[in-house]
Image 1: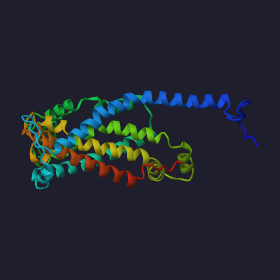
Image 2: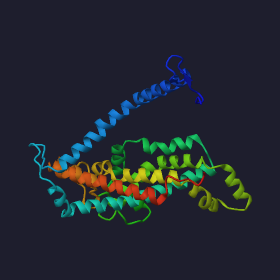
Image 3: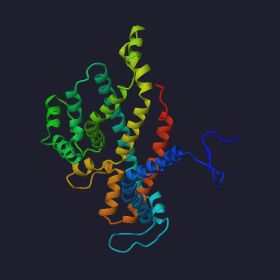
Image 4: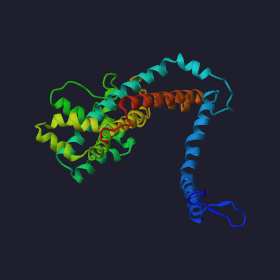
Length: 316
């Protein structure tokens, strides 16, 4: 029996595919070629700016390289030295402290701002105003707050003294330095984070809030029972991006001390890598620390995505 959709050649008796099906297959092949053509710039950019530097970084982490001589292979010596390096562990501990304070304050404030915009006002002017601190370069933010928190001339300490608070907030204070760095960066990025969360809230069906209001639920109950559960995928994305960005803190610390080395309480892991590479010229050791940081961030991101069930949404 002849198969449906096929024809037999009159001379050979072999099956011949219809011309329409051949054109469809040719069109699919052409679409794939066009797709790869559009992906080509991205692939080239990834290979040049991500894959190649990563491979070079792994190689340098296994060498004794100082910029002044050719790299010499030393195996895992840099990693063995890293395990016993007290300064590395202190930098990691300081960074972890900063990450916790920064993400906690930034997320709580951003959630509050996003909820207020979603439930009370959707002003374009307000949204634009929230983006202003995020648009300011990090170097400018660091210089601005270094001046505001100056122990002698700073506006913030002048106000505190005027209201009778006998506390000097300064980046040179072992007690206040790291909380101040965290809060400065929270000030800079909270508005942007709030807009991301606000965009997620706009995807929540309005009828859910209307039904809850009819049942007598207040704003706090609707936030806990509707907004937070349905916002989980966006919140997971925000937390992952904030985690990675927080571990990359460098500009504020470098600028706040006017080019001088920061105190140990604010010497974060990125500054430690910079110091090892460009102050002491231990490029191989700096690359090893950077590789450890990459692995650590990958593990933390995977755990965070798993715990928050980022790939699932309660909307579906």
